[in-house]
Structures are given as structure tokens and as C-alpha cells.
Image (cartoon, rainbow, N blue to C red; front, top):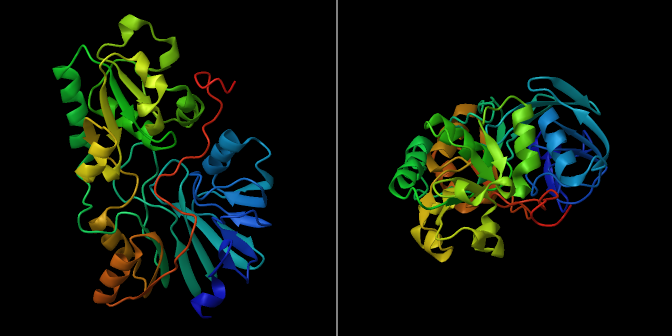
Length: 346
């Protein structure tokens, strides 16, 4: 079977005609397989959704219990039949519950990786290379300039700033799903013992991570903190809150932002970030290459990001490769925040 007969692009996203399902569709469809809970991959309104337990729970938190007509859980490593096509969800290392989806039919194996990260992360199961004929990869950081440093080293920059400026609140911008919880875990690994204060938009997702056994220590809503608790405290908030009127309650804060894009100094300056932290949930340039080669694939399809650069590298590495030019995916996009006591949502 030719790979294009098993999966191909449509206006709604990747579609399997043999299995009659879509992977991470960008529009409402009858049957969707979802790689992870970020809003550019997991949308509400599908007739039926197949995903990991954690991704289903996250979609329910973000969109409500009726986010789909029906929901079916896929455990890591479990082979599931969908209209005669075998699909298997395997860890992607991106965020809690994230999965690569192996699609097998008539001897053809294609892995749709969604977003993925081979590096260690205490808040997500580790990425597993999956042997396949075709690997479908993102390319968010597919340029040589993007080589992410050790997250522990970036976290040390934050703890050093806390020691240097004990009178200033440290506001850390981080996406509410995945990045915020990873920053909390990294701070605990660095020995930070004080309560971590969080924006209201993060409360439900952070509580969910803790309910799944992710150790985050003492985490409290910042709205419950007294004024004397704020000097020297870490407050984690959505990136948009850094420049929002919400941030004016903190006098002379140190403003930080945890993102792979902080490798670009101009981007940090444009966002008024005083302390850029290069911490990403995506593979960097070297990790992309290593992960692709580890699958042993013969062909690479690239969904979004720096497609041309990754396709060029793949050609030099002896792989057939092509961009899919898919629209609707982007780096670390946020879903509408869950109801927040601080935003007045409820």
C-alpha cells in the first residue's frame, strides 16, 4: 500500500480513507484521533474522539464535558482497530498525555507525531522512537539557531535572580497547559521550596496535573496571597498576563518568559522580557534530526514550522521528504483559558 493511500491531507487535516478518521483535524469531523490537548491540535465539536485518558480529561477541562459526541480512551501501547486500520498511541514527551499515533494497514506504517520532545521532562512520559516507513514531524524549531540549553541551567538563572533580587516578585510567563507545570517541577528539582503562586487561569489544569501524580509542591492561587507574601515570590501566569493590567498589582516585578523562542534576543526585547528562559516543549534542531533518524523511516512528511529547512536536511540525509503545507497548527498556542476567578469568568 502506498503511504498516500493510508493518510493524506484534506482541508480538515490528515485523513485516513481506509479508517475513515482524521488526526488532529482543524475543523469538526465525524471521527478524530487527537495527539494532545493544545488548542491547535485538540478542538471541540467532533462526533467522536479517540485519545489518551489525559488528553480527553484536558479537553473536558478546557471545553466542557460535552466537547465531543463520544470519547474513547487509548492507552499507551494498546493496539486499537478503527474500521480495520490499526492505530497505536505512544508517548510523545510533549506534555502530559501527549502521543504519537502509529497508523498501520496492509504492511504500511506511518507515525503522526503531533508535537514532540525527546528531552527529559518530569511532567510527561518520555518520547519513544517508533519504527515506521513514514514519519510525520513538526518543524517548529527546525533551524540550526534553535539548540535548546539544559532546562536545569535555565531554571538556575531564575533561582539566581531570586537570590539577587529578594525584594522583587518574579513574574514568569508560561503557557497554561504543560509549560507552566514543567516550570513548577523544574523549580522544585532546583530546590525552590517556597509556595509557587499561580494565575487563576492555571488553577484547574495544575490541579489536574497533581491529580495524575505529578509532584509540584506547594502551589497556591496568587489571589489568595497576602501583600507580604509577594516579595521574592515566583508567580506563574499566561504570557498575555505579563503586559495586562493584572500585572500592575506587583510593584517592580522581574518579568520572565519560558519559551523556546527566547533563544531570539530580539523577540525577548520586543515582549519586554527582562529574564528570558529558553525552556521549550518542542524538539530543537538536533533533537528533530536524531528523532527522525531513530525511527528508521524512509520518508519524512513535515506538517508545520520551518518545513523547508527540515525537508532540505532530510534530502541530504538520504530521505524522501516533503512539506504538507498544513494550515491551523502553530507553536504553543493557547486554548481559551478555563474559567478564572481573577478574570471574572466565574
